[in-house]
Image (cartoon, rainbow, N blue to C red; front, side):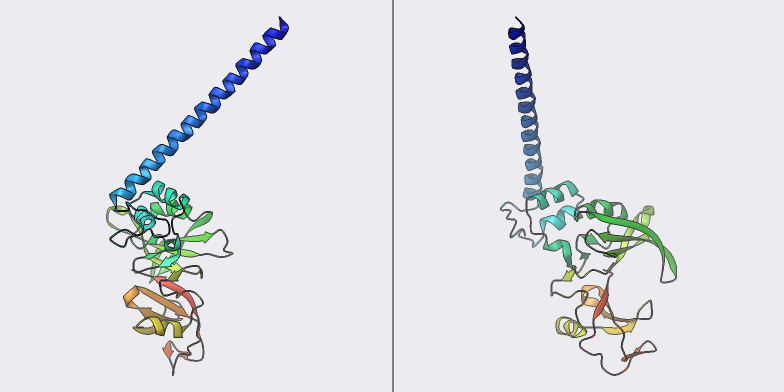
Length: 246
């Protein structure tokens, strides 16, 4: 009798474990089905019917990952990354964005966007900008020893704080032409029409390129005296900071 009770107990436990395992598997499959449905609906809505992680653009030339962020679909953005979408856009400096961060983006979205990059430390500080005290968010990415980006905020209508300027310190962010921190003044001249070199907020030389909405802070040299360019700027002069303002 003891053996029989023992055998019944073993069968019951085994059946229970199989049932739980089966239920867990069914739940996981159901979750994955729902997740796939959400992603497929998004891709279909924005014209990515033939989605390919290596060539993710639709007929409008839009990138699904940036589009997901722009429309506040952060869940879809995470799914796209998990599916292996081309993530070059995350580190591209474009006409309206620095990676997935965009001028005009609500400050409340910054944390969700940062999570797409992995471990990112966000520090809020007050800073004087153009004579006014504005809050800024300093972002330090996982593999950087110092701040990666600084997002300068401004209060807009309805008391919503938005990004109005992005300061880039990391050489991982590049323009489509491959210009970034460490590039030279010669690189700038070869790729853009420079509207002028002016005195920056900290007194440093600042090369302005209106066409891409960026200013490039240059390392100082003998050619920079009393806030003015004296003679020619050496082509090897390096870019040390980039300001993204539109």
